[in-house]
Image 1: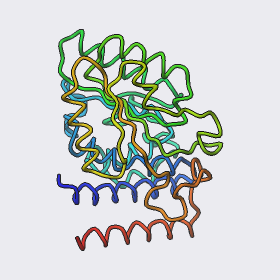
Image 2 (image 1 turned 90 degrees about the vertical axis):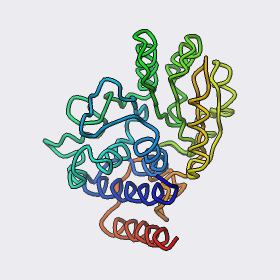
Image 3 (image 1 turned 120 degrees about the horizontal axis):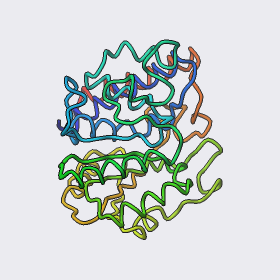
Length: 278
């Protein structure tokens, strides 16, 4: 896909995120919106996947380590054709396969159940090691929050990945600068994030999370990197695309009411119109 088509798709994924969280009257819109461009690129360009065969053995794997941002994953999967987009309105409802955190037993396209922060990257490292031991060529991608990386388990996993030279692993940090309690530097400052991953023998790339040229170049560089895992630190805007949610910690884990939903969807409609004029 070209950048314009990717941007249009990302905007649709953002609409799905807002719709799902509004319907559930609960969820995490801020961090879901900040990673929508990344999810678009992974599911529509980067990863070897097939919605018609979600469990094909040679597929690339994705683990949402910041599992509370499940609305972003679900919206991307629906947009890609894993299940009908209409099902997004069943988020967190009794009997729905779209739980508050991803569940691999019930949702097609979900490779790992996640939600307890720090555990997702650990599982991703295990998947990458398994591929190496089995001489399989699939790649493993995992997305972490910048608040999540305060968890010690993240760095245990990073140390192991670097030690084992897992060059089939890409860890992405969604650096939107905010977590539930406020700015990350005020809660538990993780900076410099890039130097920390470098210390654990990762190849590190810093990018703008909303620039598809930079996203594309970063993943191409990751594929070319041999002998060490890659960490992509992407600077993003929490709540990206919705005027009143952008860079607001209060929208970490809160659903919009009916009036706010209409404003949010109008914001995204205008973004879509602008993209169609390009």
